[in-house]
Length: 143
Image 1 (tube, rainbow, N blue to C red):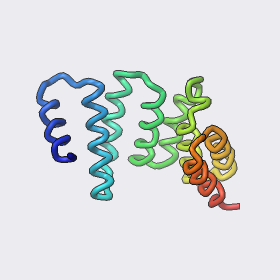
Image 2: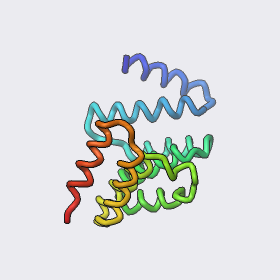
Image 3: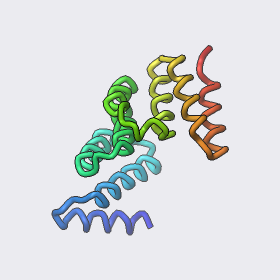
Image 4: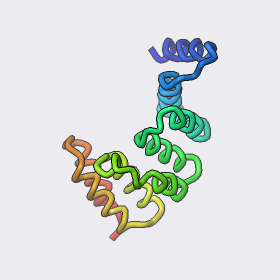
């Protein structure tokens, strides 16, 4: 199925008109390659998210892009990208925003802000398995 999807993605790219679905498929392909090979092409992933963000102006895409920026340039750069969209009211109750923020804060050494962000993510999460994972991440913070 992965090979078939890659073939379709290459065929779509030859059509010369890049749209949202092609970009989303290319992002999924990049994540599949990362999962299979253990190495991410973060510069390419950021480039794809930049293109998708230009088409959609979605805060969800902006959060995903910030995580990719962190993969490419480190957690402080990822936090800066998150901060750029932090004022969007659609993110106030978006659990992945808070989980990403918590992770990047923790990775940058800001333990107490990370703890607070994990608290927000945990409070917003309904899935018990995800909530448990987030609680474990918070419990693993130093101090």
